[in-house]
Image 1 (cartoon, rainbow, N blue to C red):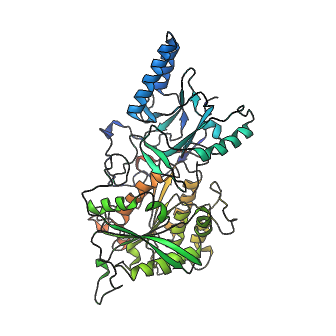
Image 2 (cartoon, one colour; image 1 turned 120 degrees about the vertical axis):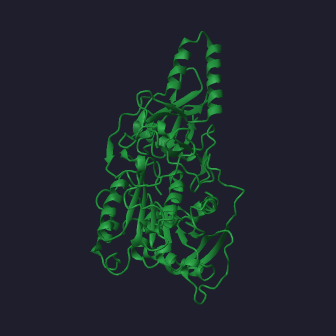
Image 3 (cartoon, helix red, strand yellow; image 1 turned 180 degrees about the vertical axis):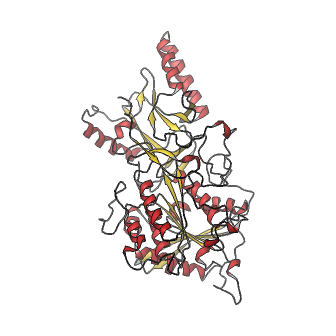
Length: 529
């Protein structure tokens, strides 16, 4: 099998000065060793890493089968010690790394498929088949990646009988069917729970990837046993707007007072808890352990004590039917979930201290909620929002590579009635985007929407990172966004138009791409949420 052909790149023109106080990487011995990554090509390119190239030469020069077996065993012992994928410097590309994914096969192994978000093109799965090192049980696939890349991946070996399909169409069908059996990399201990499956994906982060000091990733120290712990409860609500019951996860910070009256006489809202309303609670609290992250943020003084309300998504079919730009779901959040919780716990009633957030279709929901209900939600965190969504799509249909102006940008431009504007007496929500370079047309879609929102008086920021449509990226950037929007930074004048509680950290009125902008790849993502 030949290496992947070069793929067309695109240039992202984001201002790279956004984060005024980026966190210091915790897993780098000397981050200054890295060159400025701004503008460097972020497109994954095929490469044979130095370690594989050296092993191939050694095997070729081995005197007999025993010597080759010894070399192979030594290689696997080294891989077990260091973990996988192999990450190696490149003499001719100091801002990139050779990243080699490995699989140990056996006699029945016929091919091995890599499914990596931000790397694998789901329409060209044959390009992500690993190569076999002849005479060994080593299967490998190398990519040259920019040194700030982060992503999750799965792998699967095909041990079926029969000939490998020679027809590319039949091979693609075979590989599509093989995806259902993929799992974590056995030699990579950094894992993240998979969405909708009782399984895990593997995670890798290159040395210059943005740190995630408050997540459960390696070196973060989270969860921590020496800090006060918040509580998480799961309640069932009768969701009238949806015509069904829905479970809602509720996080309350340490020492929160439960079942307190909605508002006591003379009480100031500043004494009440800021609020995050987050889509996909079953993933964030049921699998990703968001409580540990919020506990650590509060304990470190990065966030004030705050509450989180996170409804379940139920399942893929229900999620696709309910999320997006749908008035019914926004009404469920704004008119049912928040009032229900506010009657039980001391939650803020101020929109400028209330954040709505989501990913994929949840990000689209968060945007629609913030734009159509700014009196309830004063800030939006939209991570990889599904801006391809529009009314009239068939149930379950997705169009991640749709071209043209997103429907939500047309709506926000005021071409339809009923959308409050930041210039019409209702302060527009602060909007923050997190977008991966490897998410097809999403960077262009968010740029179109950002221009419209800014023209209407909204404060809009955007973080463009070197990753894909991936919880491995979102979990860190969600924490970063919350710190910027409702954090405990001392400079409350950084965003005077946002009001108290929003934007109290360093100003983010420019793109927050940092060193993560540059050239990305327009390709089909390995997943769509």
